[in-house]
Image 1: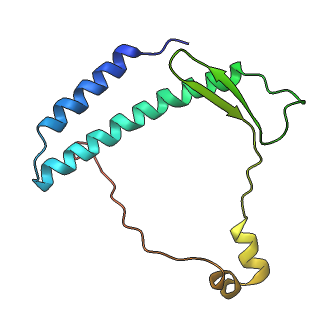
Image 2: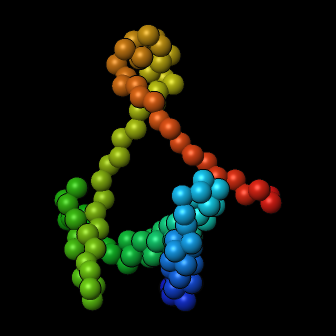
Amino acid sequence: MIIPFKELQTINSLIISDAQRVDDNPQTLIDFAAQLRLHIKELQTIEKAVTQETTGAVILDNDTPQGSSVKVQGVSFYASVSETVRWSLDTKAVKAEMGLSWYDERCNHGIVRSVKYFDIGA
């Protein structure tokens, strides 16, 4: 796999140069945050590809106990690769089987504030 290091350097320099121009003007902050989010998405795409490559290169055999990890040494860092079982709840089925009030009584609720950014030119 070829890691686009030059692309990473470009993203890094853009973030630093943009950060130096940020003031407390809401318009500037919105533009910087949206650009930052785009850069983060690019970095996450690269990280996902590298992680897939890493996990594919590590062999976990049947002798590796469930939930344990295999340590893989790099030059400056090491990775811990493991497999676990992830459980998820079918909330639609629980609501149908147990009833919405039963479900609501057992759920924690909280208000979450979120911000979404949209490109004005799009």
